[in-house]
Length: 501
Image (cartoon, rainbow, N blue to C red; front, side, top):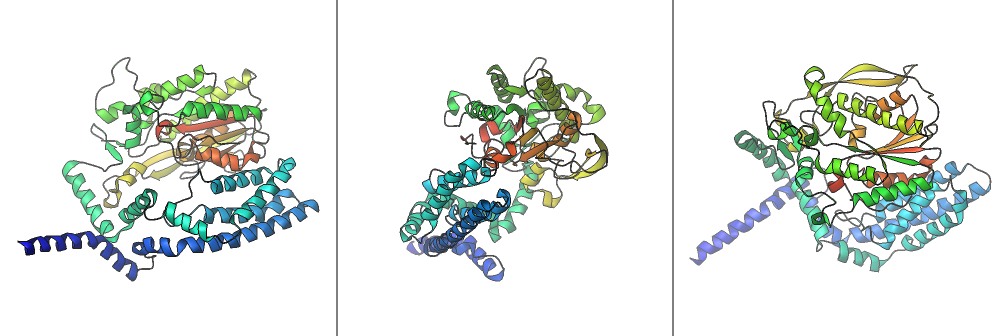
C-alpha cells in the first residue's frame, strides 16, 4: 500500500514539474531569457545590478543638468538645453521604478514621488522659468537619493518586492501562464475545443444573441450589471466624480474650460444584440454611465450626452450600418463621426454663449473615402482568431485632410482645443485608415486646429498623468475635451487618482 502512495506522490510531483521542465528546455533551446530562473536571479543578482545602474544614471543626470544650467545662463534655448536632462531623468526613472523583472516601485514610496515630481517640474520649466530654483533643488534631491550604491536598499527591494510577496508571485504566475511553452502549445487547441463544443469564446468575451452573434467585452457587460461606482457597495473604488471635479478646478485655475465626454459601451447602445430580447418601450438600458453623466451636469460641469443620439441613430442601421463593430469594443466610422458632430455642436454652443473663446475658424478640411480591414479586438482577446473563427470586418472611413490634401495632424502650437482620450479617440485616427477618427472629424466640423493626448485604456488617470508631465501643452489652450469610455468609471487603469498639474 505504501508503494502505491509513493507512486502517486511521484507522479503528482512530476506533473507539477512538467511545465517548469518544458519551459526550461524551451529556454535552453531558444534565444529568450530563462524565465524559469527569474526567481533566483531577482533574489541574488537583479537588485545589485539595479543599484549600480541607478548610481551611473544619477551621475549622468547630475552632469547633464550642470551643463544645461550653464547653457541656459549663456542664453541658449531652454528646450534645447533641457532635452539631454529629460532623457537622463527618463532613463533613471525606467531603472528606479522597475525593482525587478516582475515588481514595480509602489506609488506610495518616497522615491517614486520624488522622481515623478522631478519629471513634472522639469517638463514645465520652459513655460515657468520662475520655478528654476525648485527644479534645481529637486534634481539635486534625486541625485542624492539614487546616486550611491545602497546595499540596504537592495536588500529592502528583495524583502518588499521579492518572490515572497504577492505582487511578485502574481506577476510571475501570469508571465508563466502567458509564455510557458507547454501552455502555449496546449491552450489554443483547448480554447478551440471549448468553442466548438460549448460556444464559449473565453473569459474576457461574452457571446451575444441573435443570428450574427456579436462579441462583447466582458468588462463592458460587468459595468452594467455591477453596482454603480457611486453605490455604497463600491466604497473601495475611487470616486470618479470627485476626481473629475478636481480636474475641472485645476484647469479652471489655468484659464481652461473642461468638457466631459463619456463614451457609451457597446452593450449600452445594443443591449438587444447581447441578450436577444426585443427592446421594451421606455426601458433605459444606459444605466450607470448616463446616470453619472447626468450627475456631473447637475453639478455644473459641461458634458456631452452621446447616449441619446446614438440610441436614436440605431433606427437607421438598416440603411447605414451599425454604430459599433461586430467583434470589437469600438464604434464604426459612422459612430465616430456621429460623436464628432455632437461634440462639435456642444462646443459651438459653449462658444456662442461666451463660455469659452476658441477663436475664429481658421482651417478648411475635406474628407475622402478610404476602405480598411478591421480585425476586432474582442476576437483577438478570445485567442480564436488564429483559427479563423472570427472574420475581418471591412469598414469605410472618411480620411480628413486640409484643402491642400495634407493629412490632418495635431497642432499643439496653434490649437486652442486640447483633447484627452482613450482608444475610442485613437481608432481610425492613428490606425487604419488614419485621420478618419472622431478627433479629425471634430476638427473638420469646427474648422479649427486641435491637439490630442491619447492613452489606450488609460483615460481615467494615465492620460492626466501624461498631461501633468507635459503641462506646457496647456499654453494657449482654452478648452479641454476629456473623452473616456463608461467602463472606466469602474475599471479604469490606475483608478481615479489625484493628479497634480
